[in-house]
Image (cartoon, rainbow, N blue to C red; front, side):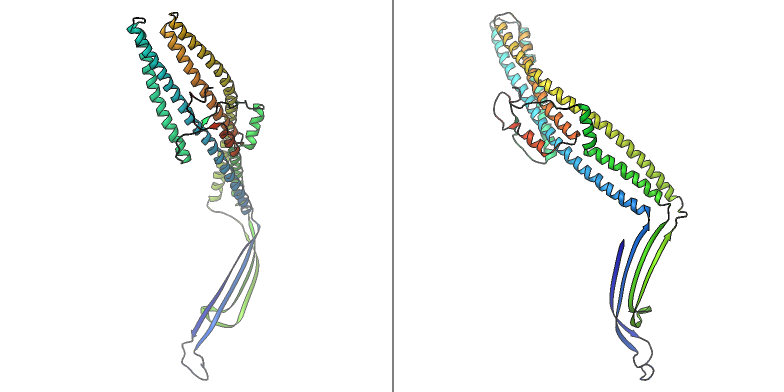
Length: 392
């Protein structure tokens, strides 16, 4: 129901315009206090449009609440992603710098051996070419580091210097459960999809609202009025009160086609909301599947990269020994060294891919929380000057 009321007090002076006469006009000017009191109550008895509008408002509130949760989840996942993109870029830069220094030492060695006529000039040119390639890669990696840092700063609006690095002893476990089960969880728990479902419900309620405008409405009205002031502020002398109770029936007949076209508009918007919901479901299934499979693939990739790194290190060491004995060429040595650093880069990329894909997965199934960020924090440690903490 809708209840309203008002009160009014006034100081009134009334001059009847006639001259004073002791007998006929003893009070040509009179003063009195005027009062007015008003209260009304309106209650809809039959108005489907108002009921469905109220229901739609509740649905929209739930939609925005789900969108708020989705935005929080997106922010947490984005922070994890941008943070580790910085660490990954720094690692890649470190590898190129380390490989460049190793190649420069190799160049010095080959130049000394050339001066002794132990190697060909083509070998010197080959090593110089590798050094130049690594310098170009280093410049590109430096740019990626700066870009990644700016992206993180833009997201967090927080200046930072040295970021904590990934620990050596982090255990990378595959995600448990079946993919189909996780897809069902995502459909029921993902807040972004929940918001879209509420948007469909709100659009459906809007269609019902527009249909209800073709129906009659019935309102109950209770009215109370009390005053001692009459027309043109005349003094009534006594308080006069009025009480009214009424049933108001309103029947829509014709409004120039406004209602029917509003109905058509609401039906089109409902269809649009349904299509967006279907697209959201398909995108969610794809995101859940991709992040789940990519996370588990990253675990296997980490294990394979660790083995490949050990093999590449042994191969590089053997190539060095063979070159000193004259069994292999400088090309074989450079290729073995290049494969070793490539294995380091791939291992680092696999570890960061696992962390980022895992955060994507937790967001898609609606389970990413502050506890996930705290868990990731336990994988980090202050930066130390070692060969690199993410390749062991």
